[in-house]
Length: 136
Image 1 (tube, one colour):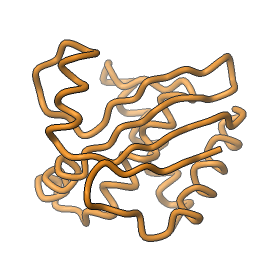
Image 2 (image 1 turned 30 degrees about the horizontal axis):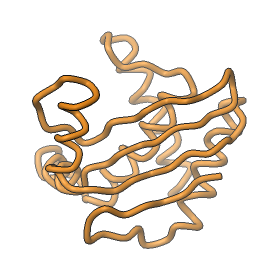
Image 3 (image 1 turned 180 degrees about the horizontal axis):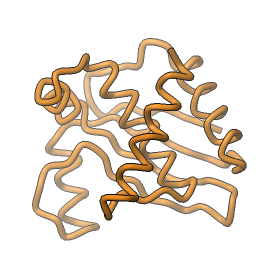
Image 4 (image 1 turned 90 degrees about the horizontal axis):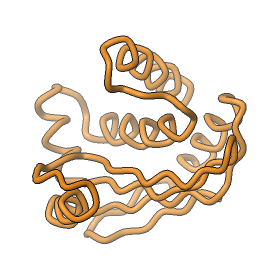
C-alpha cells in the first residue's frame, strides 16, 4: 500500500494516479508492494532527519528508510518540497517533473538500484526516465 503524508503545506494533485504509477513500477521491477509511506516536508524537517539518522549536516531532496524484506518493498520516503523546487530551477525543469523524478527515485532504490558510482547513477537515471515516460 502506498500512502502519502504531509508535514508541510503541500498536497499532491492526483494521489490515485501517482500511487498507481508507483505500484506499476514496483510490479514491472518484479517486486511486491508492501507498505511504502511518502512523507512530504520542508528543508528543516528533512535536514533534522539527515543529521539525526545519517549524520550528514547537509540539505537533501530525499531520504529513504528501507525496511524491505527481500522483494517485498517497505519503507518511508521523505521528500523536501523546498529542495525539489530549488533543484527544478537549477535543472531548468518543471517542479512537478522534478517531484515525480524524486518520487520514483526513492522506490527504485527499494527495487535494488543504486546511484553511488557513475555507472549506477547512469542506470538509475535511465530507469527514472523510463518510468517518467510511462507516466506521461
